[in-house]
Image 1 (cartoon, rainbow, N blue to C red):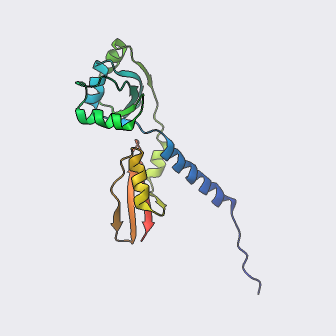
Image 2 (image 1 turned 180 degrees about the horizontal axis):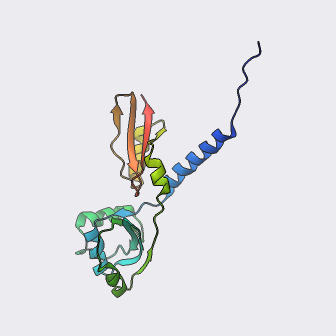
Length: 179
């Protein structure tokens, strides 16, 4: 009887590389400051917004972090100061506001409309992405230090410790460690 020969598929390498590239892109991309729509409008009225990207569900842009007293709350200013960015980015949920474009034009803020590509989100919404890692708690702390807002790590009945993080389109990725 001949011994069983193990085969190595190139596809395992391709999938592993794609997963690693995705994790790297997710961790190294600068994460904008989340703010409410009313905070965004206050920045716009104060002349602090410099440029915008208008998406279907969100508005993303940059603003000047100086002279924010009286425009934003003290807590929000401290949060922005802690980020240490000279030109911080922000993201807010887009609401129905027919007067927004005239306001942007009057304030001489450059803006660009963007078509949101949802095929990845649609594809991933059919399945739950769970990445097995070691050191879930350390990874959670790293995400928080990078400005992400993952759920708190918790133990599951199935014998694992996990937390979840979602991207702006709502795709949820779970990071789990077997206990």
